[in-house]
Amino acid sequence: MKKCFMLAAMLLSGITATSAQTFGDMFGSDQKGKITYGVRAGLNISNIGGEYGPDSGDELDLDSRAGFHIGGIVDIPITNGFYVQPGLLFTTRGAKDSFSYSETGYSEEATTKYKPMYLEIPVLASFRADVSRSVNVQVNVGPHFAFGLGGKCKYEYSDSDGNSESNKAPFFGESSESEEHYGMKRFDFGLTFGAGVTIKKHYYVGIAYDLGLVNMAIEKEWGKEAKFHNRNFSIQVGYNF
Image 1 (tube, rainbow, N blue to C red):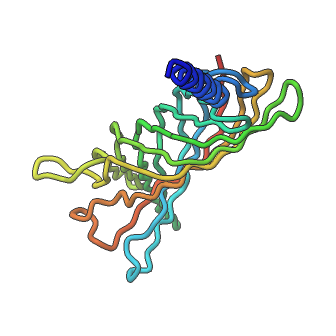
Image 2: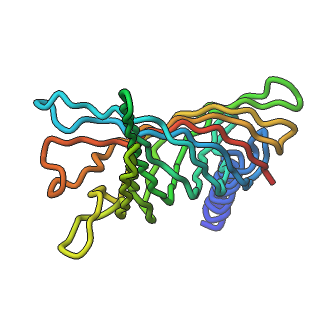
Image 3: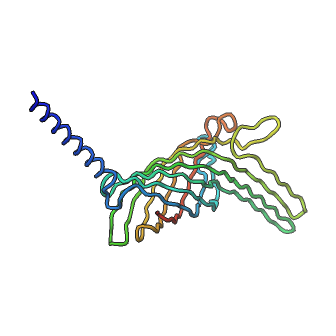
């Protein structure tokens, strides 16, 4: 009986050691080492795509708007060449629209700028490979979750007769009797696709495309048929600690 207990203890110890080693191999023995952290910042080129309704034939035809993002990421090694990379970013989105008209002796122009700001949480699967001792390339894909923090929709009009008009409204939320809102939902969800290069384990340069999947239009404001979606291309630089 004593031998049986000793044998069981040895087996249990072996299983525990093997499990610990496997866990360590997954999370601590990747070619890049243990969990690391980084900061990210860069340029956004964003737009809003969609349509007012399939029967109206009136698709959104907006111009892109330049913005920025800044935040941090965590690199969690799972196994050789594969990471999970959650992050937390402050990011701008939106678009702009412009109109101009001119004839002899008269001209007018109008611009509308959509300027929402989000707190974005990407959770990316990151596939990586060393191409040299100092250069590592990666491909990233995964979902992102975004929460609208604020922002405005601003309209400006002027003509050559000296007439002008300017107003702005909060981008998110429904209009009320006392205040007009543009009528967009605060929550957004979508997919992120990207690629990048890490140089000497610390310096990162990459690109990404965010495809919003949530219809941002509030039905009460725009009707059932309207569909508006965030689109964003970004160029990103960063430093890994």
